[in-house]
Image 1: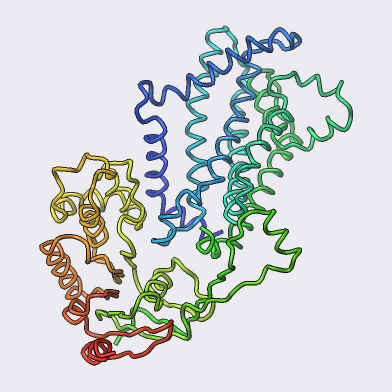
Image 2: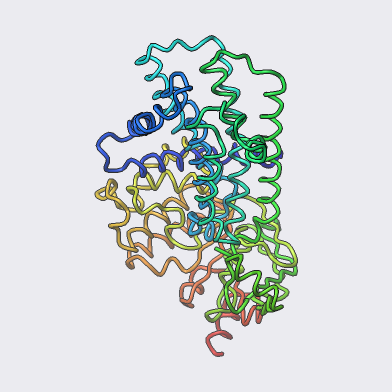
Length: 260
Length: 242
């Protein structure tokens, strides 16, 4: 752990450079550039609202309901999907210079986080357009950002290591992400869980993303102060993920070079 | 004398599984059929050496004799299967050119990126930026994406970045072969200059003349074993006559 922090500090410029490189390359030759990080969720929201708001009439403020959910989930999706191939993608570098391996998944997670902050603008824009006044509890939202950041980082560590030995994971993961998205109430109302068969809702209750999305919605939309239990569940999942992720990465990192 | 590098009883084995397995299906099938046998390939066998501070150490040997593997172990890229390596000081590896360059970015951006890969701070890079550009003689092409560069041009930038600060140990793998003769001369001058400043240099080259010109000591690797080690002249003569 001490080595980890020391290395983060030593390689902070590399992290910074890689992140700006990703931003530059991602929006290279697009007219609107980084604005797409704001526009994309807005456009997506329009499509989803057009399709689903009439189906799920129970949801008040459907655009905001969707946006708050997708903000958290898309961050997780983007961070882990990026981390998944981050070490493989940097194999030319790893083969020639010694760089601590965790830098790469960490960088992808930070990159996704920066992107999420831009997408947060989209949420604020919708607040203004719909004249939605969030309650004061929104000050709790940095907590959930931190929780989901740590959680995604752990999953990212795990995936980046495992994908080196088994490339199947890369193909499987996009399916998994879609499944996970449907297991998280992003489009459909949370109240639907009660009418679902017990087995389905139980699976959903085992999905950590459910708690992060719910947490953020509670503080941003419904003005509910998160309980100690909510916080503990979120922290527990995040730390467990980070622990498993970093252990797997640490144990296997010396063998990476033989497989990439 | 102080040591810069200690390599102690290093073995390096590679699993040369006949077919590369990187999917779960293959893995399970092979596991089931008990075909998960690895063909052990010994790249290095019982290598021990000590390189004193300020030495210029050459490694010669035929293709596949383990030179680059040894350099990668010294730079910490590979972990040896057995034995250990001790490094005293900051190491600047020039294992292959353009490591850590993103060809989509311009040379200017890459210089900073490469600097941070090598662990230099932003401030150092800013201070040394002009010096790097001067040395590489590439100011005209600074804002051109590097994918449009020739290999010699990439080599110039890479060498300039890696040697801009005085590293304690410089690892040079066969890279002086690219670049025109004038730039090669310039690189050699820089190496000489670093040496007089106390940098330890490890060079791999197929050019015996270069080794003879630059090095003090030399090692001859054959099939992953040390065939001969000692004064550069003796080793080079023996190698040439082999």
